[in-house]
Picture 1 (cartoon, rainbow, N blue to C red):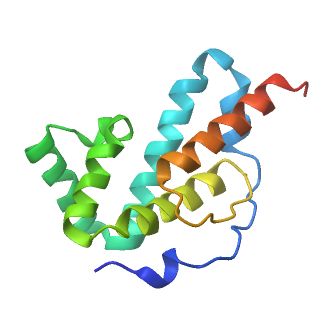
Picture 2 (cartoon, rainbow, N blue to C red):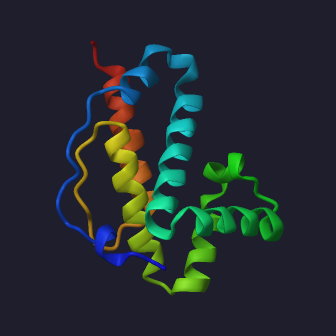
Length: 140
């Protein structure tokens, strides 16, 4: 069952200790791999938070069976995942679930999250990448 209450909270996410974000910047050559791993963790945790563990696993099985997308490749195929959400939960799912994914990812990267109306997950990803590029370019 979709838990709308926890995903529509307009409060900002509390900032976490700078653990994963700092690790991403330690080796710029591995930045993309580190970001993808962090994104994958955020999606995995958020799917469990919203749907529960067994339903999350069923989503993974469905994605592999219907779209040939393994769990490990899901961060590269989020458009297909959001298509499934849209087909099964309606047009608002891309905003509600996308906001929940973004909130979780922002927290993992120690960025302050502020929800923006009508933003999809890809829009939040653009902002995250801009923030990360700015931080990578600034001296420590």
